[in-house]
Image (cartoon, rainbow, N blue to C red; front, side, top):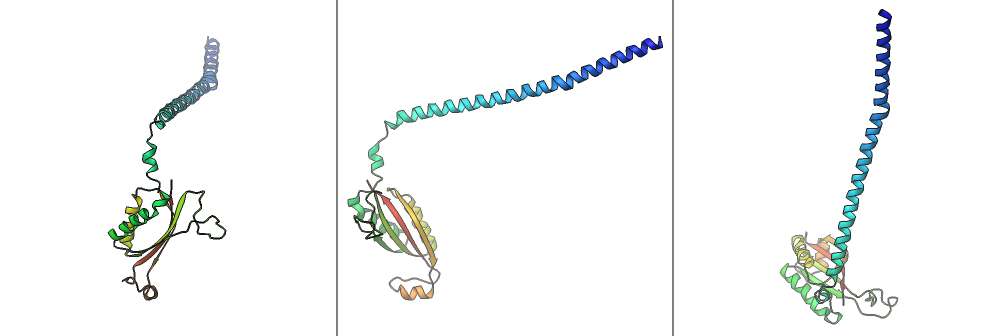
Length: 192
């Protein structure tokens, strides 16, 4: 009887080991693979939904493009014959911000080789150089106004330096103080 119990125990133990091996060797990896495949499927489904949503947005945008009022857009481009209007706008902003200024408009030339500062007719821009003198806080206010002008313009370069005693002596036209700033920036105003 003792041998029979030992045989039954051995058979049960071997069966438990075989079941454990099946669980850990086949079922758990299979469940992990199902979980990974399910996660991949969900990611693919989300990507497909996003792609479809982008396609719908593009289709709606395409329809709305026909409704765009190009006249309003064109109004944001400076008419090259009205560069004075833009300069007067800048001078108005300079007065509001209590700064001193100098504006240089570059000449219209057919050759960039003979005049490197000439307007490039192919770019449809009017290049200007603006120099401002005054308090730094007033310069910040100027840029706040400049940011909201009704024309497309880009600032290509900006140089700011603090005024020294030597600068005050050489620029005696303006009532500057030590610690004021001089800011020179080049801009392109886009034209029609």
